[in-house]
Length: 238
Ligand SMILES: [Zn+2]
Ligand SMILES: [Zn+2]
Image (cartoon, rainbow, N blue to C red; front, side):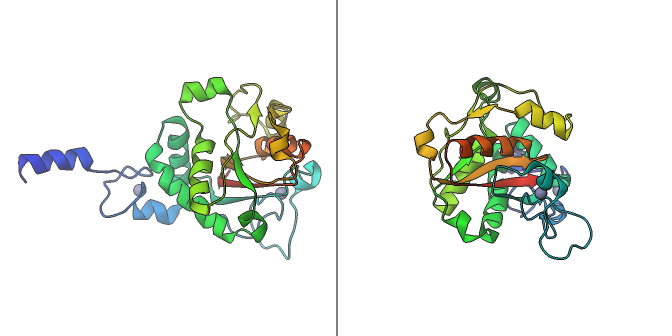
């Protein structure tokens, strides 16, 4: 190999985001093995919040959380399980400015979109879970806004980036229990221009849904401002 080829090879050789192995012909950020490991969220799952359950379930059902909480969103669905290579990708995308993963993550959302009912395909616009301005300045971007913006281009529905406002910067929720998460985000979101929301059918986009507390609080604010429906789509489900 000539020196120039060796340099080019060094500069442009890619490694898999999931396992670190050298990549060959694969497009995107995961090798074939890691890609095969990514698990789509499949039935059976809760009709309302999309949380998958293990084992056999006969007919549509609602999970205990939905039964108890009566969520403000109409329903929620996620593309993949938040584990393995998918989790590694999403964490790098969110915390380490892994912009090169945006195409893969959008592909998963688009695949999910195709399985959604007509009510999603005919929504008025897409919105995203907002970051507090201080947090967004610190990170340099809002990962949910990047996903919403990219999905909007694919599906041809307008994306309204500033529909929701985050009034305070909440602490990271990673180590909190479900009840603590719900308390942590209570009343945190508001709708600065309610006239944009009144009567609208909105698809809310986020990267990961864990307990559902954050998207539920966003949906509560949107419904309080007069949204007629709020459907939630996330890349992954924890
Ligand atoms: Zn890999
Ligand atoms: Zn549920």
